Length: 153
Image (spheres, helix red, strand yellow):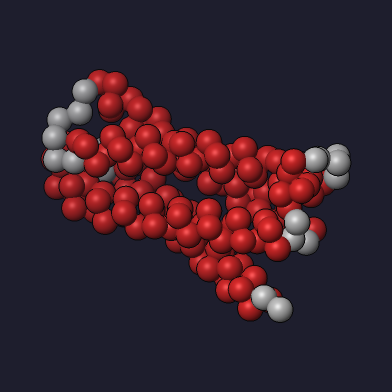
């Protein structure tokens, strides 16, 4: 009956995941290659907000379509009552990683938004960089568990 919703949710989820991870890789490479402080100050105030709002939108769509797919494939029942299967383990790991990833994204976005074009405190710099690195690494693990789940489903 609602198979078209599931199909659209899956395709939209995949598109947003590609955008999210691709953007994360791009920003990671940008951060690694722009070592000059002046270059960073000239690029980040313009690229950062555009990327940040795009990422927030992508995350909202990812979470929404993830919930739709979770309901469609009865994954919430499995998440609440794990049974030791490979899909149960992959689902649990992905859910935990997505929760951590969401918190890290909120922390990073709030700090970046409040300090855009301003000097950051030592702690703001630490939490911004740490959350950014955490987001980058977690993306790779979330992608792994998503592939595992897709192969099983």
